[in-house]
Length: 250
Image (cartoon, rainbow, N blue to C red; front, top):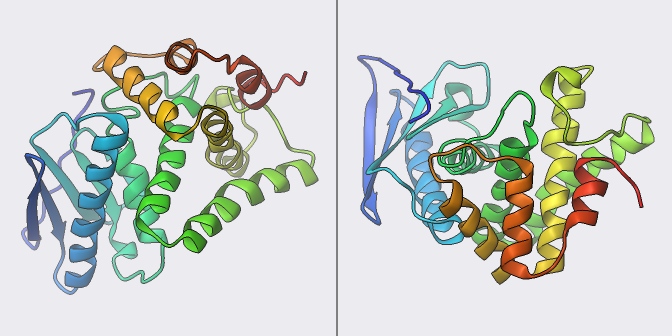
């Protein structure tokens, strides 16, 4: 494990269910029973899907925990932290946060990367994985809306405001948090969408499983991810990497 997290409350209540040998625990506070049930359901769905698409979840337990964090969600190995303020949310944002943080169990947890110098390697891929979750579990119009609002609109706003820049820069290279979010969480996932469109679903997810298998519990770099796509597919994705991540136009 790369780090650990502890949340304590005498008031926590618990919903639990086992799936594929993993015990999922949803800790919630009194008055948030509906949110606690939703947290359990969404986490179970995400783990089952990502087990299939990315490779087996490595631990015997997954905890999703309500806390007063000011972030929507935070990831730790085996733990998803969700803001208590979201537990009454009836829209899609709650599921979006759960799916994004669940994906981090693979992208950061299993396959480590430099989160300061190359934040796109885990954050862009986790956010694209969130979209994969919506495609698999929600109506098409809902997943299409997520792609439009979270990725395409964010990218178009960057272009219109002359703020477009390479995805692959370090955290310190961004002028503001809003720029960082728009580029890494909005534009970055479009690289993975372009690779997926070129390779097809079967090859795309096979390459991600290979990437996990080769770098499990280690630290990976951009070249390792590109190599996984190219080795499994037999096709080059260098032009997509240069255009989307490095910002080098042909």
